[in-house]
Length: 229
Image (cartoon, rainbow, N blue to C red):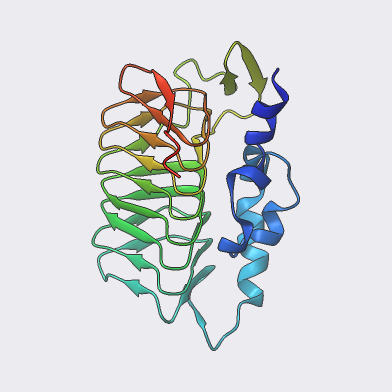
């Protein structure tokens, strides 16, 4: 397998760790999917250490920053941390094991489960995000979702050109790098990894690895962005 491809799949190249409250946790791993299994325990430990002048444990194992804006119709189950200045809108459904970063937006009827959303992530309209990690300022357009279970219920593999990476996981959604833009009504199949600064056209079906600084077109064609410097 191309060494450069493997490097792009690594946490240090997908994400700016300074842009998440989970930086210490993620830095323990090489690849982001390795962190999925421990998100719940990490939240439980981190929640106890959060400064009480900035966070309130509103119910058992649910810590919400006092500066966050959480609509009264949102449902939040623990363990969960909603960081400072985040917005959780009408009828959002946070099932638990979720970290919502500073200034992030979780929108109308959006569902989260076992996820880390970096700072300024936007999942604002009818999104499902499960068993996934979304990097700094990543954005999912209306109706776009992460599919996290294969139809045959086998372990998820990540397709990198002609190679396959075994994850050993039955549930894995998408790993989106910093500044990734996902078009409306896109489905990201189990084991999708999208490099930073990449755009995906609306109504696409994405599978496997998409390199950084690329454009994924609806027919599956991937082209590199033009350098405009």
